Length: 425
Image 1 (tube, rainbow, N blue to C red):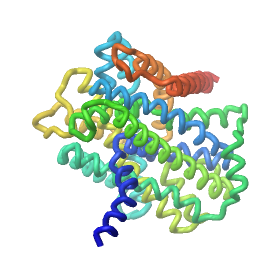
Image 2: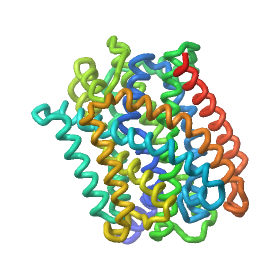
Image 3: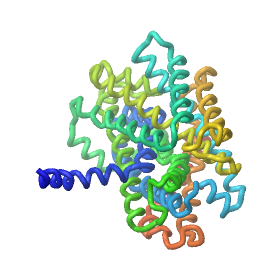
């Protein structure tokens, strides 16, 4: 009997160990597939079919490298990226980044709230979409203020399961897997404005600056709460890589299957323009059936509940670290009033966009523009910090990390240049 139990424990131990390692990297990667990201991936599939599937293979190693740098900075410095920028670099760099990043995050929050409200209304039409938006925002505020960091982290990890819904969807409809393989491994590039615009949008949505700040701060938070060893050794760094790589893999898998679903269903069904997440779900219903429609819609609500706390939290940590406020999701409201008030304000401003009838499409466009312009600057700073021995000591970037980081910088710079070109022409 004892031998049987010990055998079972040994068999389970690798899985249990793996699950325990998962944390900030998993949540960061999962939050990248928010409702606004879903719109971008859905539009890519609807407009160009399977032709952009290959982008998921490209963005995975690049995302993993950049977020890995952020995680290592958080572990080694035990502080957020904003603090590191404030202490070691000219203030104009930090203030410039904040000036551009804050509006983009607020618009991103607003687009996600609008998307969730629209999907809620679609599932139960008797309640208006704005009412859903208010209710969901109130629930998010309550969770963020009421629960300590450990509880919020656990909630976010469980919400990551909602992304699995999108991996199921493509298997509910007929697929030409030979074509899927072809477009996955053989890149398709068209030198026209529409195709290049969607590539820029995919990059801007996938490699987003707010993720850099969240990842770094959450690694520092895990240190502060004893989730990881205070001594940054090879084991801690190895576990961090597993966590980050798993999160980025999940993020890009969802992106891949989202493009696959909309590319094989909507594009083939003659639906070539998607402006909102509820529009994508509605378009799927007559073409792929009620089950696919319901899974897609429920996934939007789950990813929104996951992404919005990350967006609002990242913004508030950035502000608190810049101004020297007491900050931390582990603190009670009275211990960090300014920090929590800034979260509340960001959620309310995002919610207000719904009532001012701000177009979600325009919101996403402005968000993509600002992210696209700030990402190259931040990636350059991450590379500099990651190779700065004064900050990172013996844990500077590896050759592979630098190579992938530089590739990301060049690609995001090219995307930013293309974005500016599209706006001018």
